[in-house]
Amino acid sequence: MRKVAIVYTTRTGETERMAQVIVEGVQSAGGEPHLMRVEELDDVSPLAAFDAIAVGTPTQEAKEVHEVTAFLDRLAASDIKGRYAAAFGSYGWSGEGPYIAALRLERECGMKMVAEPLRAKQGLKGTEFDVCRAFGMKLVFGE
Image (cartoon, rainbow, N blue to C red; front, side, top):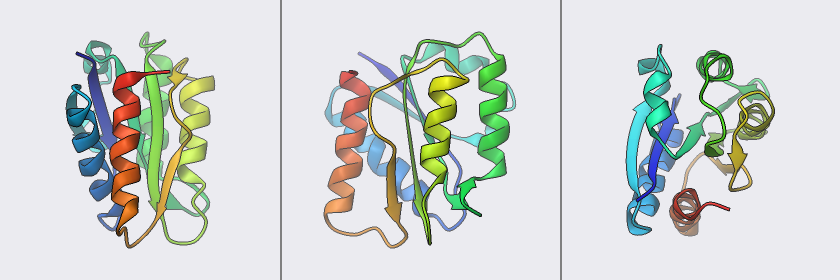
């Protein structure tokens, strides 16, 4: 069973809603999801116990939010490498945050990306929840 850390922060609650639905996808694929707030991970060493890491960030001022920037800095400086990874997040205007986080996960943190960054405009509805569930499933099935 693949253990999946879903690490996120939120501004309006939308990225948190995405994270919760991603948990459902991980569970439906037989994975073991663990939902964590970025703000609770001053020490990233507990992430060494996970097979996959999903990072959720809203977009603010055309980039990831500063809490995620600091988290990814700590992750890049750690010995945690080679995990499966993906990035997701919500946005109001432009949506670059998950793309920037995904690039950092791959290039700076040495992770293996299993999915394109997932972004959703605020006000999730309908099939967007299905897309989030499928994203969670990809974290379990890998490449």
